[in-house]
Length: 73
Image 1 (spheres, one colour):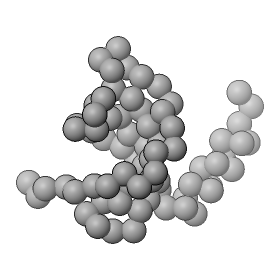
Image 2 (cartoon, one colour):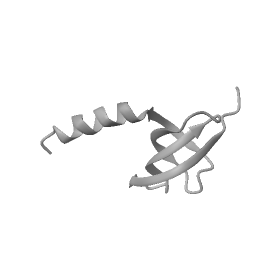
Image 3 (cartoon, rainbow, N blue to C red):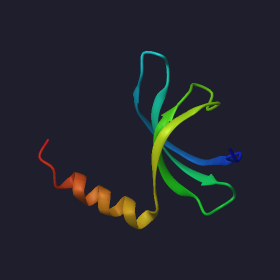
Image 4 (tube, rainbow, N blue to C red):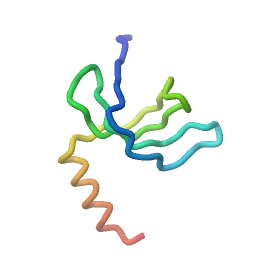
């Protein structure tokens, strides 16, 4: 399996924390030296391991924001 390189450009915030100490975080991340994307996934405490997640470009993030703003919670 190919090595995945990443650089967290901006930490936006943590949404929750699991009992094992992993945080579900929204970050701006450059994957393999490419243009940074918004990324939502679980991270181990020191970002040494990660879970599966979702990456979004700015346009997709705006659509998600609008969808969430339309919800009655």
